Image (tube, rainbow over all chains, first blue to last red; front, side, top):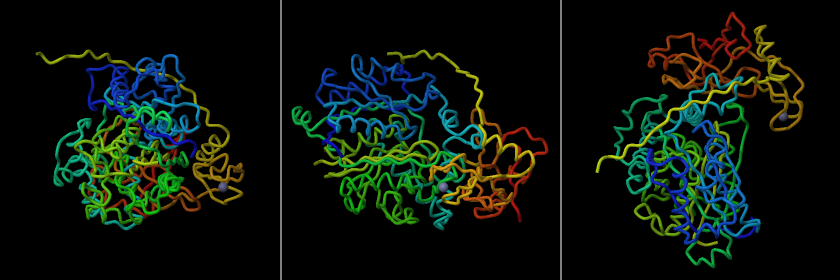
Length: 388
Length: 155
Ligand SMILES: [Zn+2]
């Protein structure tokens, strides 16, 4: 895995609709918070990694130019990485690679999106191929609904049971977001609210779907030497995995989803994890859609295939359950896409360093973070621990 | 203190493109003109892929053999779309679907129609996962994916 790498600081904006800040200022809000959290200044940073969604999202191309000042990169090497929804995990991995290689001591990683400025679903549509599939695209809800329907059919999950479990995930995530001062959507919802919400793409309803958020996240990666010198309690990177599959939807099996399964499998091998449900203390899963979260539980080995709804309904993944998932309120309550995967990692780091405030999972020592990108095409996982 | 007001500027970016389909995909649309759905077969793993590929994504070898697949297949999954999205080509409501055409080894993305789509409860009774559907051709061939007008449920 290369040299040891620590996360020594994280920063997030207040996520939501942020017309009070232009886009670069939004980025700076997260960078400033991360530097403060790490107790360092820009002079300590050796390099900067940035990631966002495709340029169509806010209509400005190659945002590493736009944010050069805001992300404090003047006079420093800059890398831009983008993998659609999984961007936040990809840039985290990139920060890890840079420090693990020994070529940098401290790297700043920044992810951001200002969804209120563009048309998120139109941008998603441009990710589909132009010759065969784009004609039938219905943004993210269309594809994620197709995947969820296929998964329920494959494993014989009754529609009612799937509905009940998905509603409980929505209720839990919304409850959790009440504990997170950064979250975009902060309101309590009931099972009935979710089940009676407006249909988006049947059976997916409004409260099964994430919002479109403005927000940024910054994370500071450091070598063991630099982390020791700074002297604050770090989160250590224990394992990471990233996998992709075919571009055309329909060419690979999305009900068992190789890329999600193997990205987690790779991260587990590196971290020495054999029984993730028992060994992990908390997980931050990229869940823009309630139903899809259950497919991730299965791919990540939290439960057998086809049984995620049973585990959800038992309360396994709720606050106080065996493996609490998304104590931050998750992607379901906050989704500035280019930042979202990095927020998952930042939240995992906060958990294992005991800095998660009201949303802290008591005594968390090992945490999984994740993001998914494209038309169900890429998945990335990073595992952090309180010890190396 | 009065609530802060912030200025917004409206903008739009419009860029023209000319996208080449290349040899394999041009041929696919030539076959569609004759109302034939053609896939490519991999000489190594023997999978037949529709849309056809110039090379097998898993074996990374050229796919040279054209194979005609059936115009009927199994509905692997679908979604009822009744929300307008920017630049949508098809009028709502419509059904996006993944269809495993007989003789192929991949899901083909198209639409299911030919039934009354306005009443969702009736749609659910007609359109079934695992059910069979059949291609209905557009009499006019324009060289795009709607040369197959839609797939209709086979009862
Ligand atoms: Zn092959």
